[in-house]
Image 1: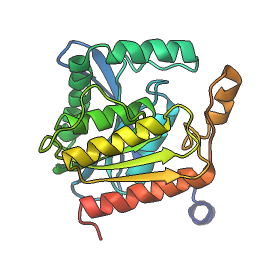
Image 2: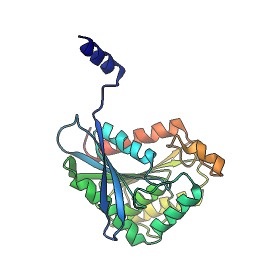
Image 3: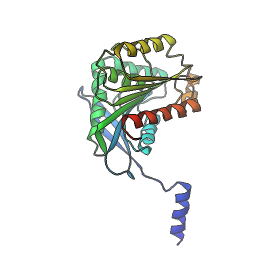
Image 4: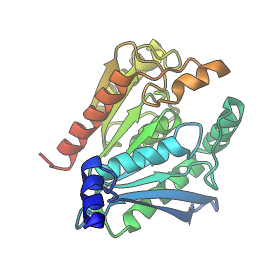
Length: 262
């Protein structure tokens, strides 16, 4: 009786809900880099479900990127936070983050191979519907998913959260298979008005199906609650709860449209 009562109390408190499962999975890109993926799924959901790749900020595959994979799993997706730096590398120091990012993007072909290795790993998971795939990215990761869309990677859609918009590989008519959603902070000093204008002109010229959302007063990093802590390191970052929640809601609606979940 006592154990049953405890179970009831835990259920009401929400503590007994442990349906979100996670697994770290080592994998390797075709350029030989050893990578670590963080896979999340809801074991209360049966059958296959759409798969979503999560690409981390310039900090690397840290707890925030992993949390977003769990958030997606809670929405019913098969979610994999991938590793663009190798060995699951991450940091809290801007100088290290800059070094990691520059190394990862120095060779565009290697960056593409690392993304595709993560996408392939997601497709290998038995819960993933291989015909329904998307990707989201934050900051550095936002640029990665936009560039993968520009390069014609076969995804239903991509979502960039406070990601850089400039590129050395602009979209061309017919090259992009994915629909695009950009969630941009209107007060983002790291992505200036020219980048925004150039991006919109690129999308228009290439006739891309995209949506651009400008979030009032939001700075770079608006979706990450840890962003405020980095201000002491001289970075113009800031968390904004309203922008975080609005952008996440936008993403959910976007995915419902992509995957016919309405």
